[in-house]
Every structure is written in C-alpha cells, then in structure tokens.
Length: 331
Length: 261
Image 1 (cartoon, rainbow over the protein chains, first blue to last red):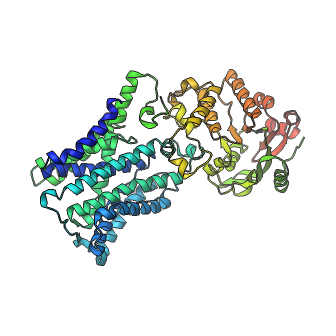
Image 2 (image 1 turned 90 degrees about the vertical axis):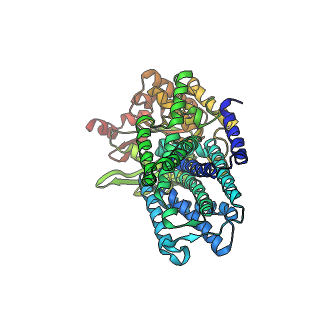
C-alpha cells in the first residue's frame, strides 16, 4: 500500500482519537466546523465538480435541514441524531424535485434556479411564523450532557458525515455513474448520444449532493441550539463550500476536503486574530482574495495542478485526469 | 432502380414485412421559415451499408439529428425495428441500438482513450450505474476494439491529443462499445488522407460482415460507391432517388441535383 493510500487511514485514526488528547473546545469546534464544511463541499462537488453544474443552493438545503431538525425536536421530541439521516433523505427528495424542474435543460438556468430556491425557502422560514418562529427563530432544547462532553456527539457526527460523504464520492467516482457525470461535464450532447441519460444522471447527482447539506444543517442547528432564517440560509455557507472545492480541486474526491481544511481554519483564525470591530468582515475579504488568487494562479485547484505536474514529470503525454478519475481504467 | 422514395405508408409496411432495422417515414423539419426536410422516407435494411448522399445543405445531417433524437421532427415517424423513436431522447435511442458519429468529431477530449470507450451505455439499470466504471469483460471488449482500430497503444493517452484521423477512429470504436445494431456515420472520411480512408472502409466492411448495419453520410464518392449499397440521394430536404451505386450514378435526377446546383 503506497503512502498516498495510507494517509486517509492515518487521518481517520487521528481524528477518532483526537478528542481524548485535545480537550479544548476551541480546537474541537474548529475541527467540527471543518468537517461540516468539508462534507458539504464534497457533496457540492458531486454536482458542481463531476457533472460541472454549479449549484448556489447549498445554503437552501442547509437551512431546510436545520428547520426540519428543529421542528422535529421542538414539536415531536425526535432527537436530531435520530432524525438526521431521514432529513438527508428529505433534502435529497427536495433536491430531486428541484432538479427535475431545473436540470432538464442545459446551461446557466440551473445556477439561477438554485440561488432563487435559497431565497424562496428563506422567505418561507421568515414568514411562516406559526411554524418556524419567523425572524425570532427557534430554540432547541439543550442536550442532557455535562458541558465538557457536549461537543463530542457533534464532533463525531460531523466527522461521520464527512467520512460518508467521501465514501459516497469515491464510490460515484469509480462507477459508471461517475464516468457519466464527467462525460456530461465534458460534452453533454455527446454524452446523451452515448446512451447516458443526462437528465436522470444530473437529478440523481443533485439529490445525492444536497443530502449532505441537509444533514449538516440538522446537526448544526442542534449544536447551536438555535436557528433563525438569517443564520440557517446564509449565502456565505454556499460561497465557502464552493471556494473550498475550487481551492482543493473541483471534480476530485479529495480536493474539497483539502480546500475545507485550508479555508475554514484560515477564516476562523482571521476572525480570532482580527480586531473585534472588523472580525466579522475580515474573513469574507480573505475568502474573496483566495477566490481571486485561485482563479489567477490555480484555476484547476491544488490537487489537479499537483497531479498534472507529477504526471508531466513521470510519464510525458499521459492523460492528466487519468490518475484521479477512474482508478483501474488508466493503469 | 428505385428512383423515387418510398411513401410513408409503404415504408412502414416494408419495415414490418422485411428484416429492416431503420424506417424513416414522412419526416418534415423546418427551422423558422426554412424547410430543412420535406417528406423524407426510406428504409435501411438489416446488414446493409447504406449511403445517404446529396449536395451540401440537402438535409442529411438534419435527418441524422431527427433519427437520433437530437431534433424533434415537425411531422413523420422514425422506427427502429418496430419501435417509434419520436419523442425519445438521444440516450433512449442509443438503448434501442442506434449509435452515431458526428460530422465534426465529438469525443471526450480530456478523458483518456480507454475512458472514452467505456462511457457509452446500451442498457441502463440502477444497478449498472453503481457498478465499477469498467469491468473485466468490458475492458476486454474495449481493448479488442481498440486493437481492431489500431489504437490500443494509445489507450492511456488523452483523447484530445490524438491525431484527427485517430479521433475519428476512436469515435467509431466508442460507438461500437454500446453494441449497436445500426451505426450512423456522418462524413467519416471527411478530412482523412487516402490511406486512412481505405483503412476506415476496411473496418466498416469487416464490422458489417459481423452483422453491424451502417447508414453513412459521405461526400467522398469513391468511398461511397466502393463500399455502400444501396445509396439514398437527398436534395433540398427530400429523398430524390435510391438504389444501387451504379443506378444512382446514372440517374438523371441525381445528376441534375449535383450538377445543376
């Protein structure tokens, strides 16, 4: 087993045992949010990276997950750790419906539809006061755990979500489905003419993609014990997830994970270090700067750039995407 | 020779009586005020290498697009065996056993040659979606086809880095991966040198010997006359003649269409 293949297992073991040694809430909180963003970014990349369809709807599904979890806890007493998988399924069903409407055509309309969707569900959350609490939001009951342990279920849940997202992304990448998505990204008309049912593939990919945002939103709501329409549907969630994927490498399994592990700590430390008066804005500026730098100097992201450089050094003329794309195909 | 196209009814009847794999009946297609196709009808017999020729702008590629689901005809029917393709999307028509190549070669340029080979799917099931991108027997078939077309040594190359002729061969090889019953080739010899054209003709002949039916749009008359029988001639959006290469070559209507324009 090569060093490259060992790294994920070492990381898995490390993050599993880390809370035993690191008890400071700040670091666990930082990791928890990094896992959350990484999971959503991996999910986003299934649609935005593999199929090449940019969705601006992540925050919409994150918010739906938050409110679904909150309402189930508040009205029915169903704990979020029980409801979260079903909320993922619920988000996927909504995603399939939205995809069915918006993905039968090609082009940029999908981007607009997903952005509009976010604002529509946010407005619903704001105006359906009887159900959602409107702008006052919803308060969720605290978990009955000692304060020093209360972060652990969320840390491990978010970590599990990330592991599942990576496994799903890997499975898709190695499957006929994944290859079909990449074919759609490369030449959609040709893909259709090759027997790839492009609408079905895109709808399925979008449904899978947004389910992670739904689960993340559910866990996040319980972690904060609170939600309101501004917090749950914040557009910066979507932008962060996209920038993470772009930085690490769109259309790769590990690119979004790498991107999240760079961007999220950077944002948190900037907020932490900046003067309190501007702390809330500094990381937004940093995100913008990172986006500009990536577009200028690393348009393919870190991992594809590295892979191209490595392939160019070892095997001239070999396809640049072969290593990352279909293991076992290009040997 | 049959100087006139079949009528819609006759074409449909012929399809059910004989072993025909593609029947085009009364296809009309217009783009705004321009009538691209008018009452196009013909039958492609199973096991044939049928040519579809005609001057530029006669509607050949538009007809291909109507047959393969890229365009929806205004009127008329297309049957693959006895199944209508009208209203079906291109991928559904592939699943019926019809594959095509394009006038301007369309391959997945950033994928490897082998990846290009494994994209085409003849049968779509949920289970097949989530199996490995390439399985043992599929790999063998892909490599056999690549070897047949002389591309096996390039299997790990980026498809966009191949020469023009190699890209044409790859497009055809990939089309065959879906195990089609009929392959529609849109100007396969266009831009190829004489050696490559001869090689391509040999491949088509050999594949036809193995049971693949071809419908070929081509301007290279040497290629058509040596390889295809029957030949269908289109002019100004309609079929004006069909028959053996020799008969078509002598047909005054055909001569007028080519020389009169």
